[in-house]
Length: 270
Length: 206
Image 1 (tube, rainbow over the protein chains, first blue to last red):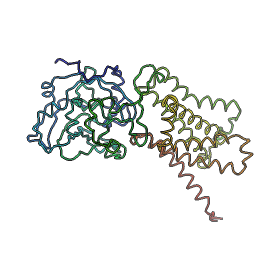
Image 2 (tube, rainbow over the protein chains, first blue to last red; image 1 turned 180 degrees about the vertical axis):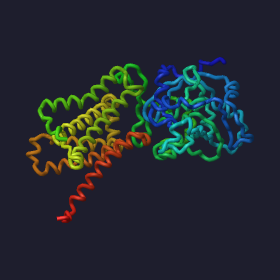
Image 3 (tube, rainbow over the protein chains, first blue to last red; image 1 turned 45 degrees about the vertical axis):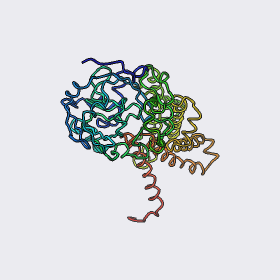
Image 4 (cartoon, rainbow over the protein chains, first blue to last red; image 1 turned 90 degrees about the vertical axis):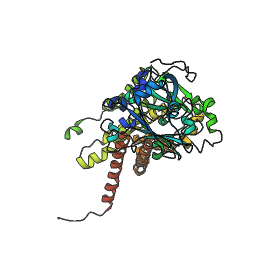
């Protein structure tokens, strides 16, 4: 179908190369090294795919991904991506706002959060059959309902005008550009509406290091390293051309999202 | 292993060891210059230098167990190997200051004074500095018995290096676990060796 490339939410910064964005990934289902996902995701079969939505909804539904793709108009969103490890990229995603999908559901008034789960397929995802699993599968993430309904919050099914590669979270993943990259859960099979704040994988692993909100914030350091600056990686020509820049609050999306957190102490709710 | 003792310990051999030792640093520097260190070349260069510092540290800690357990005597190369470990620590730290933090001193001071992995790393580096500057013959003579005592600081430095590595990474990557296991074994050997040495030898089979 047609792809709307004129989103006002897109940055004019130049995108990272496709090669770098697809060969430098954190996707522990395929291994903990940045180059593992590109190397070991070949066996993964993203299609056919179904996405289940349940929890505090009047009628739980299971969507076929093909159906989803033909229902919502796809648009390109060029977003900055800031990893909690203090590096960043710029990625042209293809997808649709999560709120379009959630608006297909009859959500109960008691729902306050949205939780997400990644598929579990140890036969196709070598990291999930590892003897010493880093994460207790499935990978889980969550958003507050108002964050989930924000127009910047995207479900991506592609990048660089192409179908989403396996190593980047095929066939459907979350992109929340004002939060650290680990919030962008990949290969989503289940979305649930909940009343309680959902458990999230990195928070379970190290609660003092990775908060539920994980909003990009140069003033709240990771306990082990500073978040004040970031390496803009993927520059051609080696380390003398890799720029370092000051990290922006909410990754530069403060104008759109700061109001979501106006009465909160962001050093406590980090 | 008698052939080993036939290798002369000439200045040429020492020079050759230094040249060999600096090949990894030069190679990764070259790759970094031409865009051959992947997507995040600064982090990669920093990591590679740290890993090589660790490898030389491990090699220097292997000299004694090799001599005692399998009778391979490489003692005469220990100083060079230890110094190489220190030079790689220095390069690792220099890359952190320059390429990574761009000499942003307020950020650097904030990080080094608040981040445990950097505090511990800096202490370990200072201990290794003390060992490096007293590694020459003159210091050995001057310090006498105290030289040995001073150089047992390599053990707390090693513990610091292991903790620094563990805290610098996000989760539990395999290479960190493997290197820390090796460090642990090498330190455990010292504990066991000194414990068995301290006991009076039983007189048997005489």
